[in-house]
Each structure stands twice: as C-alpha cells, then as structure tokens.
Image (tube, rainbow, N blue to C red; front, side, top):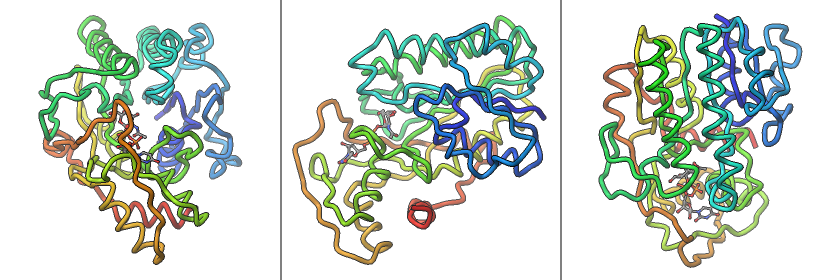
Amino acid sequence: MKVFITGGAGFIGSHIAEEYLLKDHNVTVYDNFSTGKMDNLQFATTNDRLKITEGDIRDYPLLEQAIAGHDLIFHQAAIASVQQSIDNPRATFEVNAGGTLNVLESARKHKAKKVIFACSAAIFGDHPELPKSEVSPVKPISPYGADKYISETYLRLYSELYGIPTVALRYFNVFGPRQDPSSPYSGVISIFTTRIKANQPVTVFGDGDQYRDFIFVKDVVQANMLAAEKNSTGFENYNVGYGKATSLNDLLEMLKQIYDKEISVKYDKPRQGDIRESVSNNRKLSDELGFLPRFTVKEGLEELTRSL
Ligand code: UD2
C-alpha cells in the first residue's frame, strides 16, 4: 500500500505514519510544518519507505501532484484550534474546509482507493443529547466545527457523485505523546502532564466535574487502520472515542497516582464557550469495524507520562 498522510508530521498524523511504516508500507507525509514538526518523525528519519513532502493543503497543484500514485489518503492536516477559528474564520476555512476539498479533488483525479478524514466531535456543538451516536444532531458552535462538518459533507458527496470510498472519523478528545502543550488551547492532558512534571500548578476551568471522552492516540490510529481495511464502497462516518466519560477531577486523581505526588490545583471560572459534557457511543465503530480500545485512559496516561 502507498499511504499518503496530510498533516503527517503532526500529533495524530505522525502516529498513523509510524504504524504503517511498522507494517512495511510506503508512507508519504505531506505537511506545511506550521504546527507539525520534523521531531515527530524522528522514529523514521533513516527509513527509506518514508517520504516527506513539505507542502500546504491550500496549494492545490502541489498537493495534487504529490497525491498521484497513492492508494490510501489519511487527511489529518488542519488548524486544530477552535479559538483560532473564532478569531480568524476565513483563514481557518481556507485550510479546514478548502483544504479538504483539495484533498478530495486530488484523490478523485488520481483514483485513490479511499480517503479517511479526521473529523471532530466539535460538529455536535452543545446539543445536549448524550452519548453521541452517528445519528445524534449536528450543531457546530464554532467555525472549526462548521468546517469539519462541511468537510464531512464533501466526503459524502465525493463518494456519491464520483464513487470514491470515504470515511469520516469524528475524533473525541485525543491524547498521547507528541501532542503539543504550548498553547492555552492545547489538549488539557498535554497541559496538565507537562505542568505536573515541572512541578507547576494546574488550572481547572470550572468545578472539574465537566467530563470528556479521552481516547489514547494509538487507539485513534487503530480506528484509522480498521476504516482503511474495511471493504467499503460508499461513505461512512464513525464516532471515535474510548466510549467512557472521564471528568477533569477523575483525570487529576489518576495523574496523582501515576506521578505519586500531590498536585497543586487552582480552580478558576469556567472557560467561555466550554461544553460541559461530551462522550461517544462507540457502538457503530465496534460493530462495523471491530474496534476495541486497547488502552484505558489510565493506561494511555501511563504511556504518555513515560514518554515525557
Ligand atoms: C475539544 C478539542 C477541540 C474541539 C472541541 C469540540 C482537543 C484538544 N480539543 O476541546 O479541538 O474538537 O473539543 O468540543 O481535543 N481545561 C482546564 N484547564 C486547562 C485546559 C483545559 O480545565 O489548562 C478544561 C477545559 O476548559 C475543558 C476541558 O479541560 O473543560 C477539556 O479541554 P480541551 O481544550 O482539552 O478540550 P475541549 O473538549 O474543550
């Protein structure tokens, strides 16, 4: 298989690259290195089955040329910050929605076998139905969520109009090694673990009883590979979470046990625009793709902290 990964030098993309290389496939990473890092691909710098192309998904001619000859396209590139999408919706639209269209059009032109897309639980917004299944109402509350939903819609259209098999994986809260902790809007686990390791206090926005569905990055890779392997012809979407709720207070308790030290926690007012609760119903993912998470949240945290 020839595997093409947009955003392949980023957090999730680099883990997908790593697994395909371990299975002896040829992998092309396409990344503009705005947030992706060469460091994330350190495990393979001497592997001649890895090709790295520096390029932007907004650059259609370059992207289209780079995609030629690949079978499987994993589209992970995006501006992943919700806040950035609120501050600058046009710029993020160009990348997150326009970029997806460029990927799909390139895949159509070169008759790729399948496109698998990193969608997001952000498409659900603050609609109260829980847990979220694939038929739960979609109501994005940020340009980021809207761009992801537009992208998913284009995936469906490209399959219906042009016959390209497409899959949208709606990621819940992904965590693991290589997640960048540097922005205030980085994933909470990357922020907490980095600060705890450095003996710095952590801030909880709200009472800490808000919960999320945290899924370890290697299980997200598993979901991607299962979606790629399934003999599908049309469009499919799947919610991708661990399938259980973990509150921030639960998380801090686990981290306290793992680090075996007291954690200094400051409780502040809730973050504006925060959703209170989010959890995935993994039924479709397990029934149709045979997904079974291999890491509990605690096991994922243990592996993450060992890597820091
Ligand atoms: C996740 C996604 C985001 C988007 C969104 C849609 C991640 C990293 N982000 O945002 O891309 O899909 O879901 O709903 O997966 N928190 C603290 N202290 C901190 C940092 C965060 O208390 O230092 C809280 C934060 O206020 C929130 C929770 O932790 O209640 C999770 O925050 P997050 O930014 O990791 O993820 P989330 O669910 O807001």
